[in-house]
Image 1 (cartoon, rainbow, N blue to C red):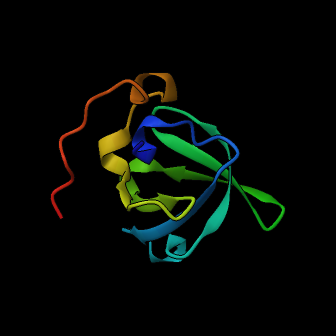
Image 2 (tube, helix red, strand yellow):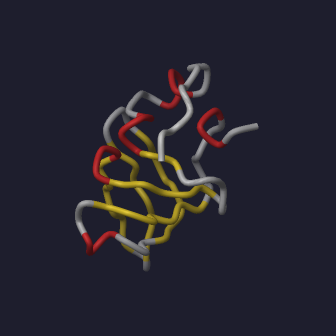
Length: 86
């Protein structure tokens, strides 16, 4: 199953691309997810990442465009997505 349709809590996220270059390569454990953000634990600190600004992988899955998954987790899991235009 596609990672867009699964819970990300407790999984490892890796930022592969971002409009903020300081976020590229950031890796951490997902602690919480809201409609607009993902909160991760990175180097014993918490970081809040705006979904719209990042492209990322979850547990080394396909790259996910954060701007396409800007819903609450419970809404995102059951949603149908058009394929990401690369």
